[in-house]
Length: 107
Image 1 (cartoon, helix red, strand yellow):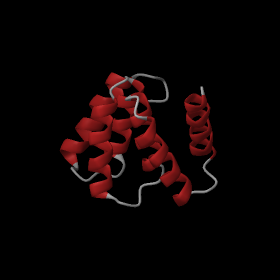
Image 2: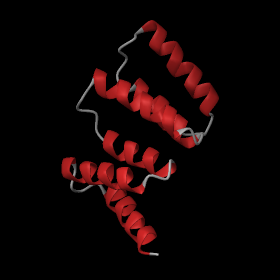
Image 3: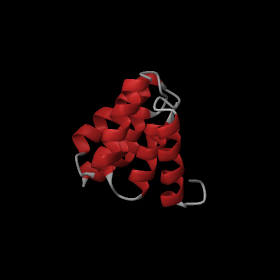
């Protein structure tokens, strides 16, 4: 994933899922890949699967905010970025994303 070899990364993650269906953070990682590929609806489904496996996954609200932002729904993006900040007030990426949304809506 760090080398932007998303198809290869997705194949490896899916192979891991076949071996261990409750593999930690695999759905989060698949969702991240889908976001990078501009497929936010599919990413949201992966994030929901991850939440079902582990409700305490960090930054999932941030990732959902990104997905809604990609879909052009600034209201939902705002809601998820704020949720991330309530869970982790020091999350700079969530704060920056929220500020960028605010600037975009002020235009």
